[in-house]
Length: 250
Ligand code: PGA
Image 1: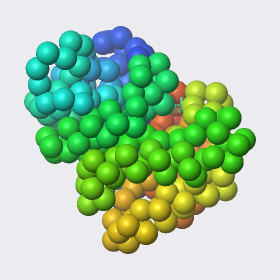
Image 2: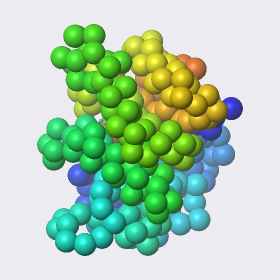
Image 3: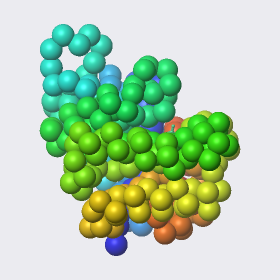
């Protein structure tokens, strides 16, 4: 049985004060109920120390939203995996579609970030997914396969025993248009089969999260699908109550 996982992606939102309240609210909610998936929040870099203090010793894990593709040196504006470890980071998103679209992340730099995370014992959450145009051209499977291939080529398939995959159709992110349960399951199943062809044990074990306008009212249906092991939650993770509802709907 795979353990379920729900990860909040706060993106570039909130203030120190509001984000502390949000983290405190989530921790309190998780403490009040043992019935929930494993949960984590990926917070802006500058809030890692403060949110790290709040989640310490709780059931809420901590993650970053990006990670440098190099270990250290003259890379202005980047944050190294070794630095994130100092602040208790357990997870890092790599290759979120907003990084790919607005900041030039390529499959190659995403693969490098993935490796940097693992070298420091951080679990990379590899984000993959197709645009609307790619879906309409029946390229969804080819796109996710290529996104996976470049990481597999650099890191090796065994690296996926310590990684999480998030399938996020770009057309569903922040748009209010969720993939249907069946649409999401179809791609999750394809991703798992693609990995199974290389290593069945890893495919059986790896957590594949769905992301893209997941909310309390659609999470249950999505999470009931056999190959959907949880969610990567943007907008709905900015409210403690709705994030907790999603964590509890597994
Ligand atoms: P959303 O974002 O839930 O607001 O669509 C998901 C994500 O970008 O990870």
